[in-house]
Each structure stands twice: as structure tokens, then as C-alpha cells.
Length: 156
Ligand code: FES
Ligand code: FES
Image (cartoon, rainbow, N blue to C red):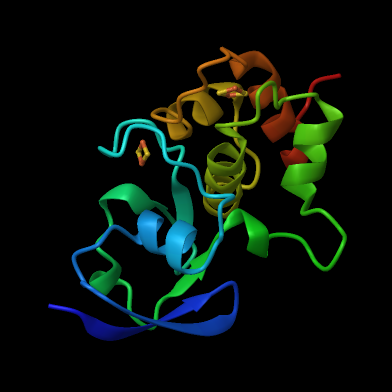
């Protein structure tokens, strides 16, 4: 049964009337046209659909929208300020980390969450904490370098 559901997306209150069991990913993309959040596997296995919920990384494809009422949801569209990129986005650009770019929004949001938890991660910690974010282009070395750059821990 449909219900009126209020979400806080990128700092703005947004309301939709829908089945609370619908995946947050679908609601973001179809109801609010926030298509930066990507559909990959739809089963919680690839993290292409990563968003932040109250600052924590979450796979929106397996998050029922009814469970995140009034929680702060951040999508890739909500990073940065105005026309300025977020430092993690700048680092991804600087390192040429996006290839096709499909995994990039999820990677960037995952990296943002990682760096809040651990501002100066080692390479091993980056690999461990980003485990589960799949890149079909195999761009992992540049993604790791971008996260190191954003953290200020790059060795070069
Ligand atoms: S699309 Fe959500 S984890 Fe793959
Ligand atoms: S850049 Fe293509 S999937 Fe990662």
C-alpha cells in the first residue's frame, strides 16, 4: 500500500507517495530524477548505488525507502558546494580515476565515508574499506591513488 514518505535528500525535504518497500535507489532515480546514483546489480553486491545515510555508506538498491524517512540522505548530486567539486571528486579527476564512470558516484561516496571514519588510511586500509565497490573497468589502482590524494597520504 502506498504511503506519503518524506525524505531529506541533499539537505532538502522531499516527499513522495509510494510503497515503503520500494528500493531507495528506484525512488531517487525515478521519483526525484537523481540519476547520479547508479543501478548495477540490484542485489547489494556491487555498491554502484551507494549513498550516504546519516553519513554512513549504504547500498540504496537494498534499502527500502520506508526505512529512511527523515534521515539525511546524500547522493552524488549533493556533494561539493555550488559549482565547486568536493575534494574527493577533485582527487578522482586529478588522478583520472573514472574510465566509463559508472562506478564513480558510488566510489566517491564510499571514499567520503571512509575518510570521515579514517582520515589517514594506509593503502591496505583503503583496499579493505573499499572492498565490495566493483569497477568493471578495473580502474582500482587509480581509484586508490585518488583516495590517497584526497587523504593527503599519496607517497609521490
Ligand atoms: S546496484 Fe546496489 S549494490 Fe549493486
Ligand atoms: S570506471 Fe567503469 S566501472 Fe569503474
